[in-house]
Image (cartoon, rainbow, N blue to C red; front, side, top):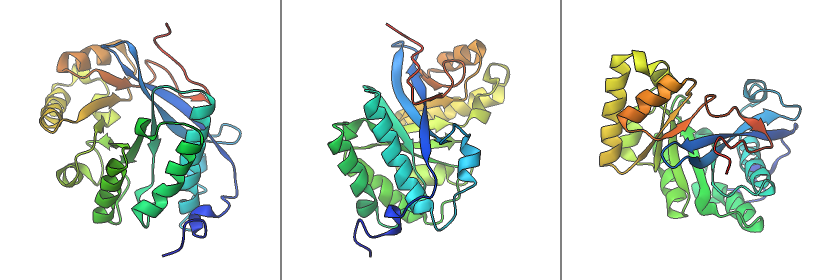
Length: 244
């Protein structure tokens, strides 16, 4: 196993990135619960254009660069709430080693690592399921929060939830879209929420675009929400739907 500082995580990425931040709000408390850091190109290019440059050779460096950039920009913006960072499960070869830079950067910038949420998207095909569970266990052991993103669509789903219970589940936007008009989706979301409550997992509904969706989700008992209805991602800035 390569020593930290000599592995491909430290190789030059070959292009620059920045982060756009989108709030996750608590509609009951009327405040921001967290900000998700979303990768963008140096000139503000969308995530798709950035991800198109990722290969098997640079994905380790990309994953680490995203983490460092998110923490550095959040610290510079004096972010006081939680920070949610997406990670690539297939870009981790040894959980403790790959976490070392994150811990060191957070400490250097006096950013509480207990405020960092690591989320993995369900629709990315997991090459090593047992390693991902080990990654989650390691993150939780070090005091980080964990989340499964896009829950309800993709490869991992209930199998991952059965092996590891994260702090948060983020419901896939396809379940949320026009939920006020879709009884089947309401029943599915209600079932997921019941399971999550039994497992002491918070649920976030993402991709919310209308007041009707907010109202329907609130009636179901979901209060953590994210989407264009509240704020669009902003480059190197923190939008607050509930300014004091």
